[in-house]
Length: 422
Image (cartoon, rainbow, N blue to C red; front, side):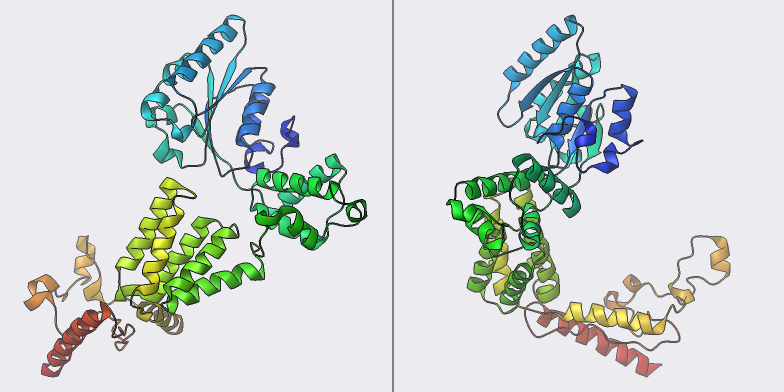
């Protein structure tokens, strides 16, 4: 299934279509060092191989997870021998972000001398994971996950190659959803499926492959949990409602159901961050920090180690005091702006960086709060002149918002007293 030419590659049209960067490199005959950055299963290794084949270069592959300085030295020796024979070398380093700075620096003199063309593959942002010296000598090309149409084309190609039975539309859609943009995941699952079908009793080999046969063949790989399907959103809803309902045990159960069903943990983390802002808010501002820290921890550790950080965040969110006061206030503010249109900013609230603006009274009459008693300009209005103040944020009597409510009550009382004196 590995493509033999660029035209065989499915996906990455933003790099491979006529006139696009990698196509232009092939067509011009100018091979250059590069970093291929993208999620798993999108063709990073394939493109590197095609580069080497297209330029009749020696192709050396190295895994940064398993390789070390000895492997780098051996690659340089092989490249020197190839150069002596008049042949170029492409050195492909998979998971290049796993190499430390010293190991990455070891490539530099050989890249600069032209001894080898360096192609690194990474799933991590090279701005953070690849040292600047190496990064400055390589173009960064961003690869994208395959969309459903591209995965469908890949599935059709695999079916033709294997002369496999037809899949029902529902089973096909479900398998593509399971792949989640990862071509390797799709092909591995499909190969397992066809192998299982071929090994079945003769009476069970014929006919279309439906969802039941798909689930039977793939077993643990194919839960009743479909990306984009009803079960997918039902499970997310159950997690959100369990957190909102302050039930850490149920919340943990639904989180594990999501992970067990193959959800991208980063998607789950995005939902947890949203929960922290929507359902907890200022009742416990630490909740948002903890979810962001969980995301950073997962980004550092990956699965399965990093999934414990998700569990910790879920438990914290579930037991934290709840408030949707900011969520409601924000929605009310959006509705207010939509109804009221674009009212002018009062002159006293405008900045005046130029003489002309000062002459036009920008900033005149503005009260600098730090110069007032208690750092508060009592009675001042920060609303448009033709608009009465509206109380949007109403803190609840839970968690930190109890104190916030007390503080707001004090400030509002000062405002009321100042306005009565006018």
